[in-house]
Image 1: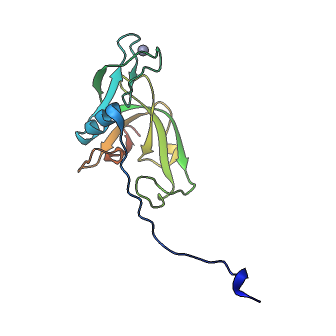
Image 2 (image 1 turned 90 degrees about the vertical axis):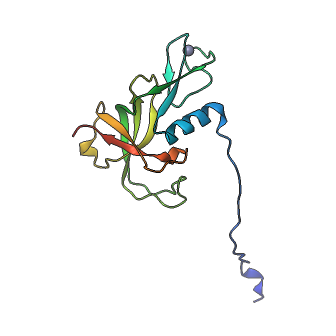
Length: 154
Ligand SMILES: [Zn+2]
C-alpha cells in the first residue's frame, strides 16, 4: 500500500479579526445597555414601541425617529427550556444545559424580545409571569450586558 490512502491533516488556528457595525439604532440600544437601560423606538404615526429600536416601523413602515426608555421589566409571552447543547455565540464555548429562553414583552413595548431566563425549571415558568432584566455589573455595550431575565414572582 502506498501512503495515498491516508488523509493529509493540517492543524492550525486561523485568526479571524473582524469588526461588526451595529448600525445607528443598534448602537443606541447597545449604548443604553451599557448604562443599564432598555431603549426602544416609538412610531408617532401608529404608536408602536419596538425593542430594540428600529429605524422602520413594523406596523406602518414609517421612519421611527423617537427613542424612548422602557422599564427593564416585562411579561413572559412564551418560553422554552433548552436541553440540547450548542456553542454559545457570546462565549464561543458550549452553553451549560438546561437553560431557559423566552420571549419578553417589555412594559410599554409592542413587540417581544427573545433572551435567556434565569429559571430553567419549566414547572416554575408560566406565560404571563412578570420578569425583570438582570444586567451584569461591569458593562461593555454589548448584548451580553444582559445576563438574563429573572421571574418577579414564584
Ligand atoms: Zn408605525
